[in-house]
Length: 114
Image (cartoon, rainbow, N blue to C red):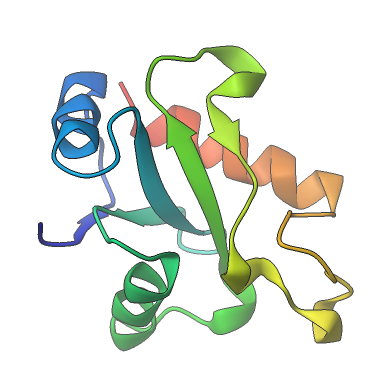
C-alpha cells in the first residue's frame, strides 16, 4: 500500500480500509507537529517518516503512533514507535514522553480524522 500524506482530512472508514489491508485493526502514522499533517499507510513508521522528511518536514517534529481503529478515546492513539527514541530531545523510549507533545499529537489527529 502506498503511503499517504493527510493534510486536510481522512474518514474513519478510509482508515479502516487501510488497516484491513495491513495490520487488521491498526494503522501506523507519523505526525508532523509543526505542519499539523500525518503520513499513514506505511509498513514501518520509518517509511512514513522518510516520506515526510523528503517533503520538507524536520526530524524533531515527527512522532510515530499507532491508531487502533476499533478503540475510542485514549485507546485510539498508542504512542509507540522506534522513531520516537531521541535522547537528544530527552525522549529515551519508544513512547512520546512529553505530555505537551502528546496533547498536540492528539489534537492534530482529531482535526485530521473525521
